[in-house]
Length: 124
Image (cartoon, rainbow, N blue to C red):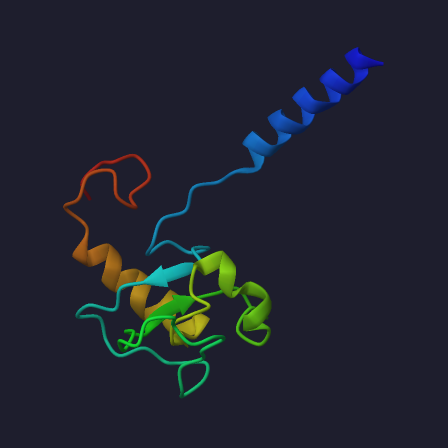
């Protein structure tokens, strides 16, 4: 019985490690915090930032811009902990803006950075 349990655990761990894919900011399929920097202004899902719970500190908290999968913005209280953003104002950027504007801008800004979002670390 212990052999079967051990084999099942090994198989589950192997499958979990195979399923992990690394996607960087500025690549299609990335979800998470993005740094707008000098990129063109984002198109937002909602005009006002979303806050699930107020920050425990009395200081104002800067809002963050997030690119999230469809449905996460609508049920933000269920998903905010994944992004460590329950206690801060969040602006959700539209996926179309992220793909058409932010990804090309980010890639052109970081073209000289080896190993950051270029897959093989080669300058392009």
